[in-house]
Image 1 (cartoon, rainbow, N blue to C red):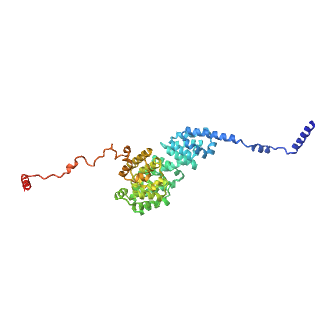
Image 2: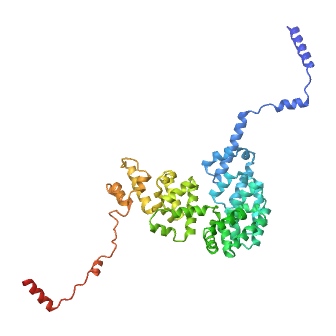
Image 3: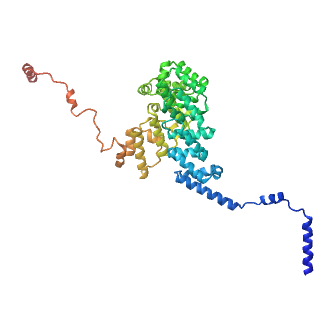
Length: 451
C-alpha cells in the first residue's frame, strides 16, 4: 500500500513538471475572470437605490415618481456619491425654486445634481450683477447650461449685451426665465431682432414691455419669419399703427405662423351665428378677433386635437370665442378631472365650451351626480344630455321630480325669490289718465241712459 502511494505521487509530480509554469500575466487573467457573486452585486445596488430614494423623499420628491426616476437614471445615480448628492440638493433648495418646478428640473435633467456643477453656478449667480435673481430664472438657466455645457461667463456676456441695449433688470430676468437659449446667440443676432421691432416702429418702454412679456421672439429668424409675418398683416389690410398697437397689447402675436391669421379670419367670416354674437366677437376689431381664434386653436391642439378639429369646434360653437381663455381652460379641466369625460367629446358636443360654467355646467352636474349617488337615474346621462336641453326642460326632467335637487339647481328653487322685472305698483304710473268730467257731461250722460 505504501509503495502504491509513492508511485502515484511521483507520477503526479512528473506530470506537473512537464506543464509550463504559470506566468504573472496568466495569474492576473485567471483571477480577473473570477465571477462576482451576482447576489452580492444586486444587494449592493438595491441598498444604494434605497438610500437615494430616502434622500430624495426627505427633500420633498414625490414617492409616485421615485421608481421611474431611479430606473431611468440608475447608471448616473449609482456613480454619484451620496454625500455629494445631499450637498447638491441642499444647494438647489437654497435657490428657493418652487417644489413642483424643482422636481420637474431634476426629472428632466438629472445632471443638475452634479455637485461641482452646482457649486460653480452658486458662485456664478452671485456675479450676474442683478439685484434679484428669480427662482424660475435659476431653474431655466441651470437646465439649459447643463444640457449645452454653458459656463456662467457666457450668461454674463449675454447680460452685458442686453444691458447695453437699454433693457430694464426685470426684462433681463424674464429673458433668461422664458428663453435661456439667448445665451447661444451672438451680439449681432440679438441686435438684429431688436432693430426689426424698432422698424415697425416699437421703441422705448413699449420695446421693454415686448421683451418682458414674450422673450421667445428672440429665437425667431428675422428674414425667414418675422418680416414675412408683418408683410402678411399688411397684405390683409392692417396698417403699421394697428400692427404696432396690437403687438404692444399682446406680443404673442409675433408667435403666429405664416398664413395662420388668414386662416383664422376666414373662419370668422364663415361663422353662422346670431348677429349679437358676431358683434361681440368683432367688438375689438378684426385683427384681435383673429388672434383670439389662434389662442383657442393652440389650446385645443395642446389637448390632443388636430388643427382641423380645433377649427371645427370653434366653427360649431362661436360663443367659445367670446369667453376668456381662463374660462375655457377651467371648463376643460372640469370636464376631464371632475366629470371624467374624454376631452375629445367636445367634437360631438362643442356647446359645452360655449355655455356659462357657474350658471349651467356646475349646477347641472351637481344634480346628475346627486341622482346617480341615489340610483335615481334610469340610464346614463352623457355630456349631450347634460348640456343640450334648455334650462326649463332640464328642470322638468331631473329637478322637479326630486325636490331636494332644487338646492343644487338655483333659479327654480323654492327658496330663491325670483325678482320681477319691474317694481311692484309700477303699472299705476302707466295707467292712462281719465279725462275731467263737467256738470254738462254728467247731464248728457243721464239723458242718454234714460232715453
